[in-house]
Length: 283
Image (cartoon, rainbow, N blue to C red; front, side, top):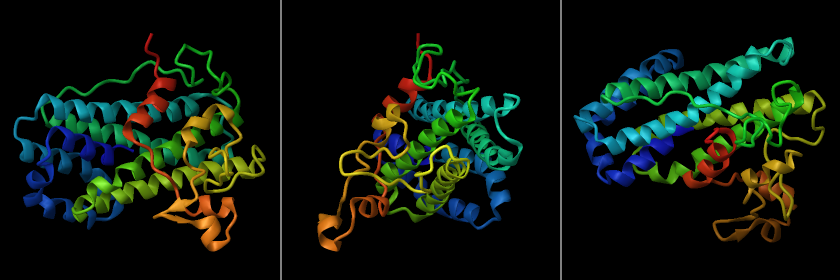
């Protein structure tokens, strides 16, 4: 979820980031021309080198931004690692889905750790997590998240849907530099597939017969997960106006069709409040 956030946040402390990276655009373009497996393996080293050349001795503010991104990735990786480690939680037939997602999230952690280290920074380590969502050591709205597979998938869906919206929220900051936007959108597509896969599992297993592979909202509520505690994660998804056009009236479409056709963004501050405020123990 963090490549968009990285560029966006570095731009706040260094408005000239695009000019710094511009002479090295070819390096990023070359990365995207490799096969996917090679590209994933090369990303940490290549982008770490890219930032190091762009900045020389990295400022503390840039490293701070990257460490914030790493904090989020530690959370996601830890969630799937914890689920995989619980004997009997994930049915054998579903391990192919969950193992792929777990692999991707751990790869994100390795990527950011390598980039921060290459910039002579100190990567943050994993935190203490409350996967019940309460930030209070187990008393949150999902008390059986690691013992009830239905709850585990519901929380996974909320995390993945939130991640996809976070990517979308940062996309405008990369328009104008296609060589950075292209690989970032590639990662965004993978995150969207994660969300769709989790939604499919919930539907096929009968955990939520009404769930779709995409978000479908009502006129007053953006949350279609069946989990009331996640309402704030879906705030704004009930929007039916795009580019100044009300899709319900202009196309005579239902609210469900209008909202399912477009996904709404989340800002970085909103993601921080929703994710870190719920799942990372701070006291």
